[in-house]
Image (tube, rainbow, N blue to C red; front, side, top):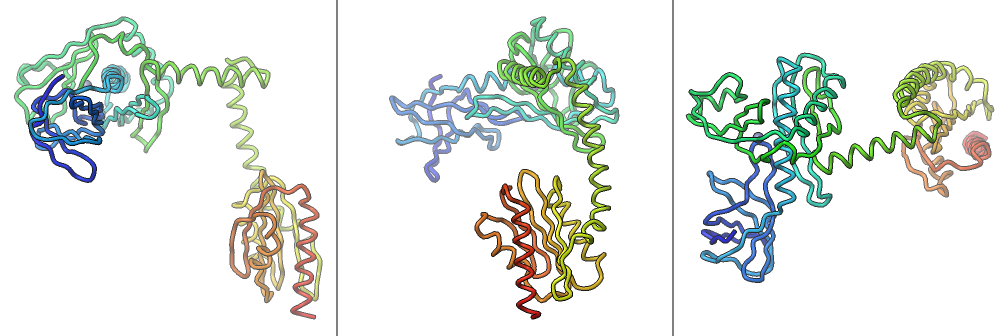
Length: 403
Ligand SMILES: [Zn+2]
C-alpha cells in the first residue's frame, strides 16, 4: 500500500513515523503488533515496532537513509507474522468458548498472542481463573472441539452492533458495556459471539490445527494455557508423539503403555525419596565408625554414592550438631559430579582453604568458611584414592599444628 509520511522524528538510529494511512496494527488487546517494511524508492526500512500514542499508529523504523515529512513510502506487511496472529486470535475465541462451556465460572484474565521473528513461530497464551479444578480431561475435550470446529470450516463474521441491542450470548467485558455505545462483534458461526477489535481469519479452516502445548498452574484458581496453531501446532504434535513413540520402542513398551511407565516412574521416585530420607538419618551413626584419630582429633570420612550437594550439606550440618568435641568430617558425594563437604569443630585449621588447594588440579567450584567447605569437581575415576589422599592431607595438617 502506498502512503505518505505525516510526521517523522529521529531518535538514536530510529525513526518514529506517522503515516497518512497504514496497514500496520499496533499491539492491542493482547495481540502483538505487526512488523514489516517501509520502502522509499529502492531504500528499505524495517518496521521493528508499532505503538499506539493517543489513538495514533506510530511506526518505529530502522534503516540507512533518510525519511522526511511528505515522503511517499510503500507499506509492506510481514504477512506470515500477521496471518499467524490472526489464526491465533481466532483460535483463542473458539478455545475460550469451548472451555467456558465446561467451566461455568470461567474468567478470562489476560491473553498474549505473539510471533517469534527468529523462529518464525506463533504462540498463544490465555490466563484464566476457574474454581473448578482444570484437569487434562477437560483440556483434551476442549481441544478436540476446537479442532472439530476448524475442520468444519465455519465462517467468522465481524460487524458493529449497538451495545443496547446486544443479546446475552455475546461475550463482552462489563467495563466496555459502560464505556461504549457501539462495539465490534466477532461471530464464529453457530458457536461464539464476542466483542473484539483484533484481527481474525474469515473461515475456521484457515487455522488448520490447534494444539495446547502446556499448562502452568499459577495458584489454586489461576492457570496459564499455552497453545499453537497451524503448522506450528502440527510440528509440535508430531515432535512430541515421535519422541514418545521412539522412546517407548527403545525401552520395550508400546506407545499406549507410556502413561503406565511414567506413573510407575513417579511411584519409584517417591519411594526413592523416602529411602534417601531414611539413609540420611542412619548415615551419621555410620560415619562415626569410619574414622582415624590424629593427636586425639577424629577425622571422619565417608563416601555417599547418589547423594547431592544439598543433601551432603545437610548431613555436614547435622554432624556439627550431633558430635561433641573436636573433629573433622570429610563427606564425598558422587553423582554425575563429585562433591566434597568438610565440616570441622574446634580445630584451628582453615578447612575451606585446604580443600581448595587439594582440589586445585580438578577445576573445582565452591567455597566455604574455615570450619565448613563445599566444593564440587567433575567425577574422577579414583574417588576412593582421592579421599585417602585427602585424609592423609588432614593428618599432616593436624600434625603440623599439634605436634
Ligand atoms: Zn478477537
